[in-house]
Length: 340
Ligand code: 13P
Image 1 (cartoon, protein in one colour):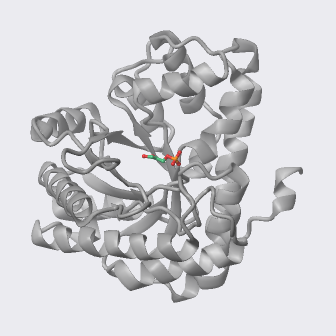
Image 2 (image 1 turned 180 degrees about the horizontal axis):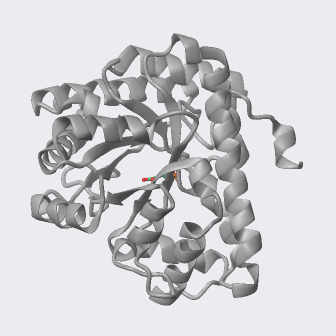
């Protein structure tokens, strides 16, 4: 894929009213979510669950791209059709998570550094041959006493930028995901300060590593008070704060922004994305889209519970969430859609 094709792919991923479906949970994360619902933690159960997702009728009305995990990109439907073919035939672009996860960072108690750069060029080439056209790498930042530190922010920002440069060399569109976590008692204001500092550092490193901004997508957190903060805020306040943070720190040149959900309830994630698009869309240089995992999948997973008989109802729930987020992109989502 040349640079122009890459920019076209990046633009297609955030075009119109569609968004991304993250279905790239690593085996341990997927197993953890299965365990909470009593679903067997086996390769076959993970495969069956991913088949449920990729065969959801009409998903491509709302979803432009799906992010897979190494195990999933190699799997097939029960009838032998590779997932990559099923997804591509449905008109959805295939992506792949390529980091090896966030590990304890030496010298920085309570902080994480994402690993996976060694051998990344070869893995990206392999994934591109398998049909992937974009990739994802996630860095995480805890908020607390003295954290995140400059050491953690700079190391993760440089790692994200080196990953993004390697993606573009291989022809894959990088999704750059620096996530400021919701855990903790910090205020909305503190989340904003950390988010702006992280984004400034990330874009500085992207510039230093010569990443083409037009050929990448940013996957940020929304600006939110910590989950245990005593002062929680309304949907409009979240929308205002998030847009303010992004306007202050994200170059206009990037192809688009697609939020992670980060553990927000599915309905709140839709309502907050909707509020941003309803109030600000005309004033923003980039599309504000979604790249949710839990906020699209969780209701469906809770219905499926590993039972074949529940597949169709789970697919309806998955489609419903995708559709709600499609309307949120347009600023036309309403809470009444949840019951109708
Ligand atoms: P959540 O939407 O569940 O936060 O997941 C998004 C994601 O892809 C994390 O890397």
